[in-house]
Image (cartoon, rainbow, N blue to C red; front, side):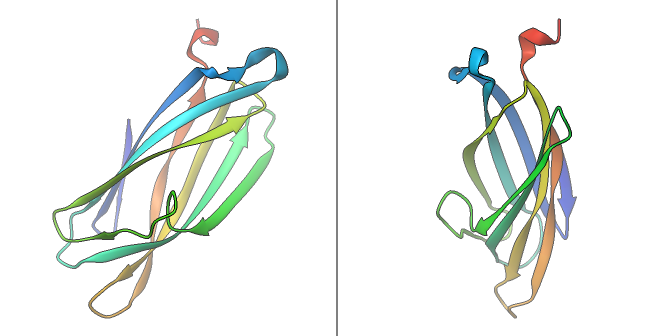
Length: 128
């Protein structure tokens, strides 16, 4: 698990390879990642947008941007958290992901960016 705190928002990421959803012979590697977002601050916030940077083993980069996460724009009160699971397909058995969220502080509408820590996408049996 990797974790990063930005503006009192703690983002933790766990990632696993899914052989069941992959086709190694066709260079399709599926990874599922579980994200926990904790509000360590004193104000309620809402997650408005996400931006992902995905880099495969060849150094090819793609960016994915959009509203919310898995179809929602969750509000997170102080001392609360939001969790979700999503996935990423790569054409290589190794890669990395990182990015950021755009949050709104609900009391005054102030927008701020929160880092998503870089995490590895890797097929475990190829590491031996």
